[in-house]
Image 1 (cartoon, rainbow, N blue to C red):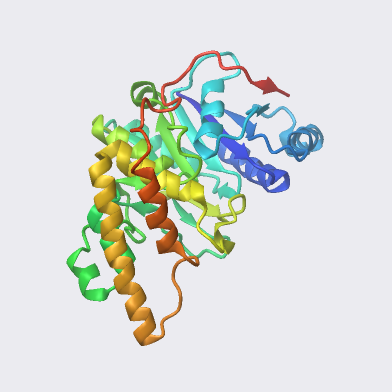
Image 2: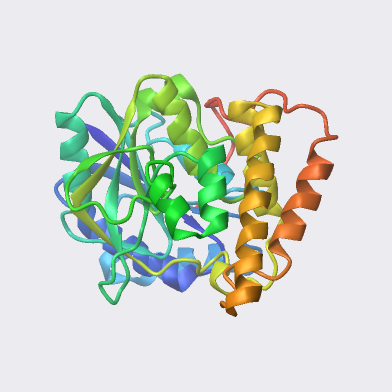
Length: 336
């Protein structure tokens, strides 16, 4: 039976994470699976709280679960890399790795459906779930790869342009059937270990955002598909650790990640063009807002921050080797 490693990453949400872990353990029943829970250097007692919670919870007794510390908060990708590198408790590698957000709760058959799909579809390297809120409202988590045209379309928010560039828009809506997509949000994502061995792990230059996009693009360039599996259902709250829903200014790490994605995967000239296209679209949208009294759609000063950030980024040295994208054997971790 194939071996599955479930990775859950916590950052300052121990109660929520344990709730997610409980759902994951239920979904792991009948599978040859282990779960590794990584505390991403929360420094708030999360590690100890999760250890204590698992030690006393009836549902956790005898469960195949470990709690480890990352030792450094390098972001979403770096934290998940710690869990992936940890492997199985016997030191072996799994056949599949499943990433589950700490605020996501898989249905009892969610993991089975992802694993079955990958086992029956050799060309698929990654598979992700249909994500919905706790209120059952579906979330958009299936996407096309970003491009200069998607930057224009997304920033302009103008019906005729969106219809003209409908095949370039990043969001794919809510697919009604299982299908191939470009990339999926990492809230519930299963991956072949053999693909990770070939293309490397998450690029740790990304602190947050664009890391899943980059990983799926590297897989696609190596000949592996990413599939949206409609039969795998996962409830997701969203933005619990990042606070994205209440941003009053776009964080620098988002701007860094966007620039790194475009410049690393397509070259600096392409990244500059993507910013130019976003600027054109953004200025058009702001003109419409002024004329038609439309509501703000971006955080305050977003376009200004984006342009100034990327002007500065143009003067930085070209990115070198991807940070920790290649699996590293024997990384130290502190186990419970």
